[in-house]
Amino acid sequence: MAHLCINCNAPAVQRSGDRFTCKKCGYRWDVAHEQANAAFLASQGRQPAESTAEPSGKTMGEPTDEDHLVAALVKYTVADIDELAGAAGVDLGDARLKHEKAAALIRSGKIALDETGAVIVVEDGESE
Image (cartoon, rainbow, N blue to C red; front, side, top):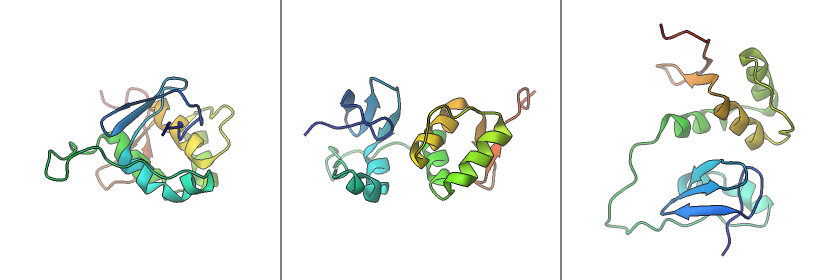
C-alpha cells in the first residue's frame, strides 16, 4: 500500500522502519503519529500505518522534541495555532488545515515546550 504524506497528501513518501519522510514537502512523522491521527486519516479514507517492529524487538527511542510539540499542538484549536503563529511572527503560508498549520509552526523553530510542557514562543537570542 502506498503511503500519502499526512501534511501535503503527496504520494512521494519514503518509509524507513516506522518513520516516514515526504520527498515533496520534507515533513517527517512516524507510525505512532499516524495512529494518533487515525480519525483524520479515516476522513481521507485511509488507515494508519502499522508498526514494522517485532513485538519482542527493540522499542522506538525516546520521543523527540518535535514529537512532544506535535502532541501538545494536537490539543490546540486552529484559532489557537493561528494566534500562536502570529505571536511567534511565523507566516503559515497557504496552510489551511490544523495539521498543516501545526507542521509549519513546528518547522519554523520559533516554538518550543517549557519545563511544564506548555508551548512557548522562542525569542531570537533567548539562550545566551
